[in-house]
Structures are given as C-alpha cells and as structure tokens.
Length: 133
Image 1 (tube, rainbow, N blue to C red):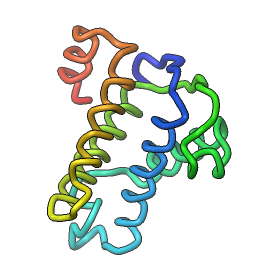
Image 2: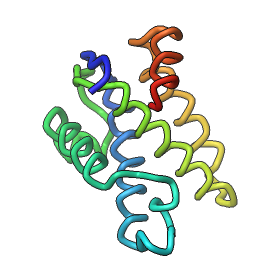
Image 3: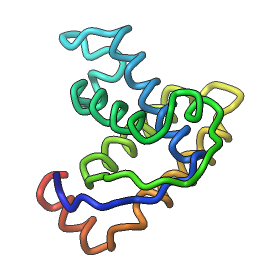
C-alpha cells in the first residue's frame, strides 16, 4: 500500500464508490480474461476490487451504501485504492456513454475524484505515477 491515509468520506461518496465497484464486478461476471471482455480489458485485479468492496462494507452497512445516507466516516485508503476507484469511474463513464444518465455519471465522477484525491498532494500523485501507480 502506497501512502495509506485515513480519508473522511460522506455517505454519498461511499455509496458512489460502492456502485462503481459493483459495476466493475458485474463486468467480471460477464466477461472472460482471455477475451478481454468488460473489465478484464481495463486491467482490473479482481482480488483488489473485492478487497476494497469488503473494506468499504466494513465501514458502512449495505443498507447505508444503497441509500447513500448516514454519517461521514473515515476509511483507510491507499493511493492504489484511489487509482482503482478512479479507473472504475472511467470504466463506468465509457460503458455509460450512450445512456441518458451519463451527465449524472460524470457529475458523480467529479465529486468522488475531488473527495479521493484531496488527502495527497499533487507531488505525491506525480511520484505515484512515476513508480507505475
């Protein structure tokens, strides 16, 4: 884990992250690694996605995540976790490009990105990218 931090997330952001991870996991169910269908072509690691989803559900209940309401809570996230979520959001945007709710998907991506990138400096993100993150 690179630079793990306790990140405060509003329930709405946690709910959005949960939905993003669910979409990525659904794509794994519909594709095959050898044919690069769905999320496989995006380089997602299934174990990392499942681990992050479980850690999210250790902080919020499934009911809270489905409603998107509740208290703001802290969760430990590494830069790899944030990169996975951001990649999941990009995947979701691409898969939703032709759907009527694409503007909501883009707004959610902007909202979550702002929340997730804030605990690290631009210099830390640049260094993370330089090491292959």
